[in-house]
Length: 271
Image 1: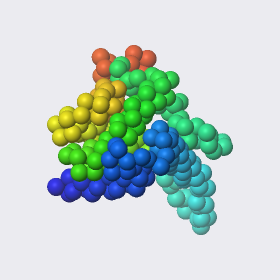
Image 2: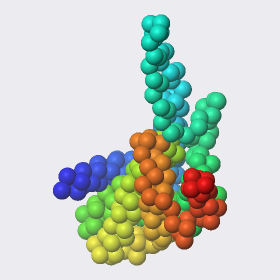
Image 3: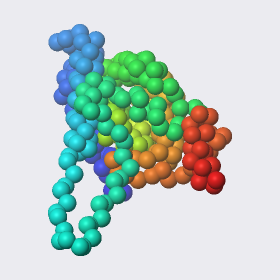
């Protein structure tokens, strides 16, 4: 119940933000102060700026946490044993200098270093796929925003889209910036749920084919990304929470090179 209430509040907040950001007229017949495509361009630019800014901020926070000097060990009296140094936690290796560009636009080397399922999409396709997803989603968003405010399903559609866009803007910070596979998984699942709800509202409440078609590429992508994010969270260590992996990758599901790397340490241990 608490999670449902929080999701409802997030939807109401995102609906208000979309309404105030776009500031569209109440009907299609009322002339807009700006061309419709300019609203979409401004919204996309703002969403990208927030996503890049949050990713860079999260990566810089992680980098500074790893750059903290180790505390000095106080000298002990002669003849006594020195205190044991705590074992270092297993963390990712940090570069010598802060990778500003990689942190802002996504460190694909981190994604490629993870144990992935065979059906995980390769890193180079991400920019292309998301450009198409965003273009269609914004087209559908503008289409629904131009409907009368009292249109049945309009508010629910915009609320679900607001939740989905919040997930989009924060994913880079959670997954690439903080290197949290668990938070990346939760983010992906929430976005999948919001997108499926968007399609359902478009077909059942709005009864608008164009609004439903605006999610035509996003739905299959997230249906692929959801299981991928779950398996990545299970098979890899979360660098933020210092937890995991929670299970061994299945040779049938894991990519062949990564599965063989996982098997090597176990083979050495048996020898």
